[in-house]
Image 1 (cartoon, one colour):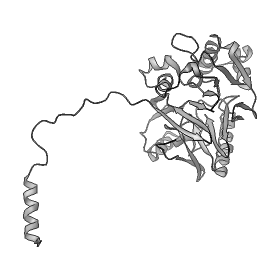
Image 2: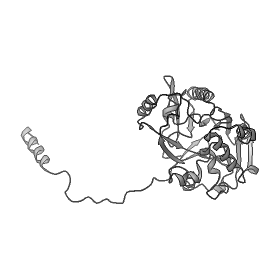
Image 3: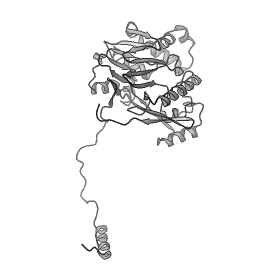
Image 4: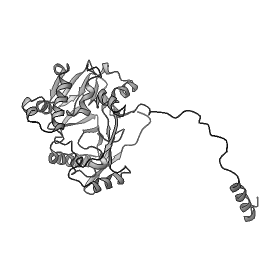
Length: 329
């Protein structure tokens, strides 16, 4: 077919004269959805199945005290580099349910039903997303707690104040338990945040949980294949874990960093939630240097969902490379 330049120009002019959109009103095939699908993601570590269960996300204005040793302009630059809005922070929360084949183990429990009500469902989603993933809380054998901040322990109770995992043993770091249950430490606490944490921990653990609590030591398996590792600084007893099956491993870092776009890239930045900021920064370097050297997968409680990936060195800090999403197990 001989398509001359004259024919091509004529065709283009005709196309330009034709409306691309009909003047008739558009009709949607279905109404717009008003919520996301339930958020959970599964992957295997050897023969063990890891279920990352979203507890939601909270967005709030960037306070001057959020990272006290960083300038706002530098924080906003880090946010912009990660394609995130300036002057605001979004925290993600991702508890885990681990199926070892013989045990169902929860690691941390999210913000709880009180936060779900207060945030109109933005956080506190762990219980509903866990049920959507086909996991019955009555079937949980063990709940392992990394540390005693509200976004990790408040999900131990239901909205009615009863045990959310009625048949589970609750395992807590011995050092963490000793600190928060010490009346002397509680009497010496200052500031609204610390005094509030002490009161909240007493509320949670005195609601029928004390007799179910078993303190554990670092350097030992707290569940099949789950080694407890000291990663202090965030709190006195803050704990991470190495989950192993065969030759496969994942490092469950708990709160070694908060959002990685800020605290992996700038490991010396001190978030306001770190109880011993200098120790927390030293721990971040130690843990992330190990992850780089071992090329081990890492699961982060505050990473963007599904909250797992790998660590590479990047200048004076680190970068999280998200693990590829897999449609199969």
